Length: 307
Image (tube, rainbow, N blue to C red; front, side, top):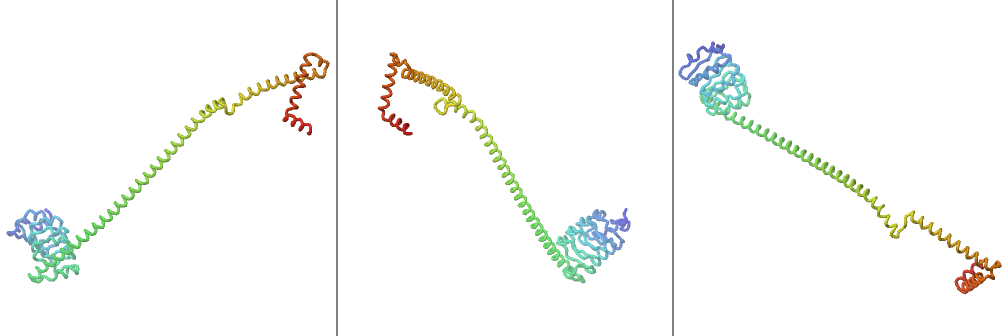
């Protein structure tokens, strides 16, 4: 058994009706498990011991109605001390308490309270006042409960305010995140549109280039018939045409030379008395006379003679 159990002895032997007296037992710890096994012990006296703390499971002793913790070394009460909802009488005389837990406000059945001889916070000490008689101790319980309820309400409001601030901050973060995501979506959309436009231009340019390449051979094919249909002939046909005209001119020149030679022979040489030359000379004389009678030719001849 623990030191606590040795000092406390057998708890059942100390149980008197619903009262359990463990005062002056030199206890350093509270025998919570043993006390939990005695739900009939609604009145518990732990005064005049060496208790500096109460374990959290002590607040599970919800059957307690009267509790005496005076003349110990308690510096604070458990944060969930308010679970002792059936507590009506509480003696905390001569400890080292400065404040009370906020859950103290839940002790709605508390009717009697003594906080004398504790280094209480000035505000709490002023609220608690003295507990020199039954009336003052009851007033102390009532005033302290009201004060702790106000503290609890203030803390709840502060907690709600912090929650509201956190919610607002979270909303702002979410709005900022949404705006950022929307901006990123818009940027991706714009980049996608620009990429699509770039690819479309490349496609159009490639298509135009292919069309131009396809048109070039057609132009060459279309130009060939035009040269045959009366537009400018290609270079090879004019070469053949020039050669034909040269041959024709040469033949005409030879013919003219022959005729001129014949005329000269008939007029100058002794052949002019021949019948053929007589005819030739007659034709020549008639031609010359006809030409002289022509006004335009006369004008040309006169111009040439003047020059």
